[in-house]
Image (spheres, helix red, strand yellow):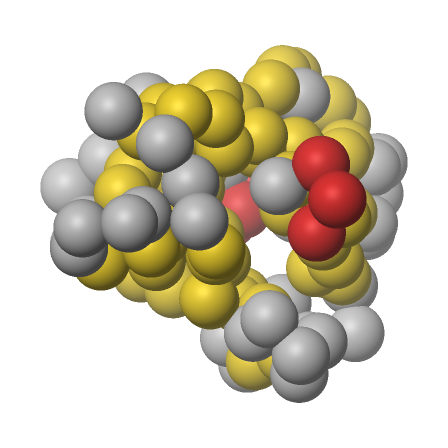
Length: 119
């Protein structure tokens, strides 16, 4: 059994910062790509950023230059540093990871953490 547990969401004013964390636990042999997605009310879930096991990253155009994704492989944890937040960043943020255990590989999701940016 694998779990992803997110933390760090909250309410912040426009221009402020938040740092999200997502820790994976359970039956884990290795973790490939880890990423953050978000879903705003009435919209589809979208990729915010991801980071591969080797450290290469991808970002949505809307967050480039403002958000930074990083990971600590020893802790099976991925982070999302969000700076210069805008009201349009308001959404539920979900962690995602491609995880290998001894029997199979699967994609896992966290429960989501709310980020609200006030204008």
